[in-house]
Amino acid sequence: MMTTGSWTTNAAIKRAVLIAAAFLVGLIANLTALEWSVQRTEAGGVLTVLTMSPLTNTEPAGSDIEVDILIDDITDFGAYELDIAYDPNVLQFKRWEDASFLVATGRAQVCQGPSFPSPGIVVLTCSTADQGGPQGTTGSGSIGELTFSTSCSGQSMITFSGTAISDTTGAEILHRQTAGSFVLLTPVVSSAPCSGETPTPEQPDEGSLTPPPTSPPPPTHTPSVPPTPTPPDDCGDANGDGVVGAVDAALLLFKIAGLLPNVPNPSNADVDGNGQLDSIDVLQILQVSAGLIGRRALNCR
Image (cartoon, rainbow, N blue to C red; front, side):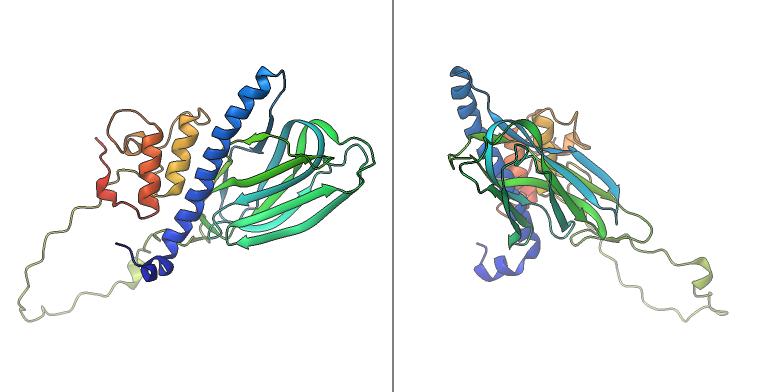
């Protein structure tokens, strides 16, 4: 059984649980919104949707990452609160630029500065103050743009961990959220790997090699060398980075939802060995990522 002390000292598991929790919250929100969508469709309504664009960002390490937060089919837009989750070891929040879509009809806007309730979570909040003013914005558009800075190579998801939208009377607007945005930062010569990555050892320059001795050294006893252990199984490592983590689960979710044609290593992603990529594979990868089961519990073919 994992002790409290080992849990609090294992930063890698904490990060994995944080990201995994964001994914699970998003999944639950989407399932709940699906029920709302059926109800509203039956009543002749249209469900409001929050999305991120672009779906994927592939940039060299050191680049800024920009993600638009879009809203579709909103009526009488009055306020929003967006909780955005990301890996703070890969991305560093830089700024949030509100696009003024909330006040496109001329209402007065009141925004609170971005807040950070925990590492890897930023909360963005804006509302309209004049209850007696014009009706709120109706339609579709960009709420604003998130910018993250980067200093190392790595991978991260940017996801909605919680959202609230209301109209100008303060009534909640039912909505759903999409999966989010995936960031891949490719290494460059001057970049260091992010925390959790395994750096590639530098090869010594040929000119710095120690020259052989002029005379052979005296014979010494050479102890027997145990055989090299078998490398760990790559089952669960859907993206091929050597780690089974929440990013692998996220890529698999994108594939299942039809947002990606495939994952980089589909045979590694089929962790229950049934020949299909499905939600059971996602769940088991998340369990490994959170330290709830061991990697050897997976069963790729």
